[in-house]
Image (cartoon, rainbow, N blue to C red; front, side, top):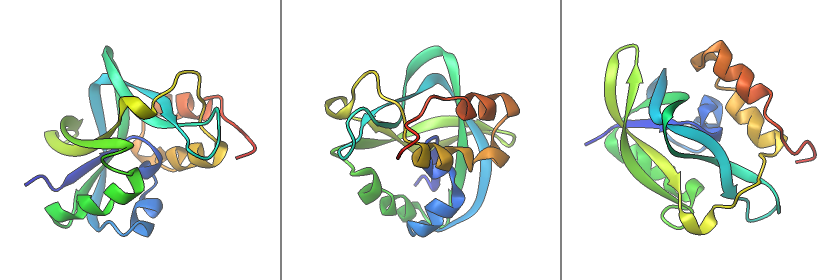
Length: 152
């Protein structure tokens, strides 16, 4: 059973993950090759606002946080927050760390909730920026420069 979770969105904030009840022993820097970060998962509450998703792009790499979970069952604690399986599907992917390549769970936005032209709210983007200790300086700068909805 896989007992690792790769977060590329707001769950890059370890404090947020703990608040959501997921138990993990370690958080590591990780990258997922062949995908690009987008904010195309439409918010149910705010028109024009998007949450993180990854889409296939063979030239891209998404950086994030790999959580080593206390047990394989811990991942199910995140499903209600991701509204799985309606909003996001949970799948196993390969990610790279300084310890080598490993399998991990991650989430993908389902086609029915995806829209173009969306931007993240500032409060959401701040959770991604909280992952700074796990990100390269270049990736952090890209996130920090991302257009966002300041009022939310």
